[in-house]
Length: 575
Image 1: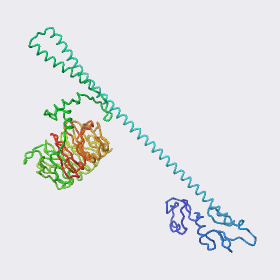
Image 2: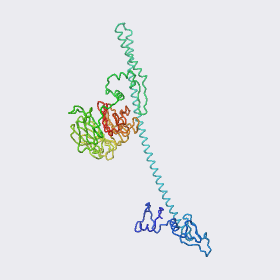
Image 3: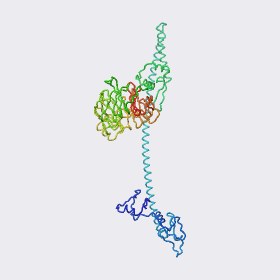
Image 4: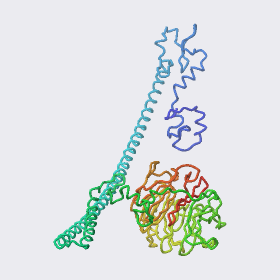
């Protein structure tokens, strides 16, 4: 029997270790090491006794002697000597461990073996105690690491809350300053009107001019009183959900029924200002004017900024993932006008079109590059290739064109966003999961690399100086500045309004409103850049106006929303 309590016959151990010259051997079953020679390994007394018991025909299974039979020592087969009239109780010793009887001579050896095995058990307990001590120490070390991580996370949260507190208070102060300026304007108008009235009252003659003056002053005083009345309805409140200071009242959009009727009756320009656009989006029904089903598994789309030479109108370009073709179709009838393809293109994903160079950029997710075509659909060049160094790509998805011949690419497989030169492919900026080697290389090549917590970014858009990224892995929209530094973020995993489930695409419309394709929830959600939810469009279904899996979205300058549906095999244009 080995120290680990596993038992083998002596012949088997000799066959395994007989020719070995190593000082340390391993148990064939559990690989526990031992250093004893084979001849020094103790026997398993229990098994030996059991084998002896079963092999002795003269011993019954009940350990009770049959009539006319004598009990024997289990070790040496000795029987009580009847000559000396020794009683069995005096001749045998019973072992409670083995449940066998031994003669006095064998009993001594048997007890010696048991004592040796007890020392072995003691060594095993000591080894087990040391192992347990190491495990406890490891758990304590893990506790320290967890405590450190929790402290760092809490500090970051506190710092972020402090920054948001400062921002909210500054916003409130700006609101108060704005209100103070308006107050002063009204007070000045009151003082001027009072002075004018005091002067004219004493000089007023009962003629036509006095009547005209009375009407003028009556309107002026009414306007002042109306401005003052608005202050009664204005309330400054703290929005805990968005961590913002807001002013609610008539001046900020709460209008009477008469005012609403006037607004509906008038022809308004939705792009006049941000407030007007919000009202327009909220009141809009978003009905599809085109339901196009001629492209299996469509992905990204983009409206060309030029009029086509054949049909004389702007064409809509759609990436067909299964067919490996980019389709150019009419917006009204869905007639296919052009097809763009290349023998090396495997999986066209997203599209961006330059009005300056009149080039069409198509990201290929499985070719790990960006294909560039001319306005006529001729192949021009390729940007990038597979890899994780600067300028290399891995499964790129969303793309957006920037100023100065730049292109922003969601390098999805590398968990980062890269800004490359459209002509040379040289990297200018990257942010995301940036490795130490990337930081060193950026320092040597005078490029910008910023670490950021991105996981599988799938869509990118630009608005002003901001870079808007859909961080699909974290179900959040993150906004960065032109240096790759995060400014803000919003969203989280869920099915409620304002929450996302497997989002994949986004597009930015006028005034920076974000149209997000919430694929898992089969809907489009429209947000301000501050994360305020404006409107939700669609729902799950296969008919017009509904979605199964939103795989592409594009907002045109005239506020048409173009949506690709991967599982419905359709493209819808909402107006």
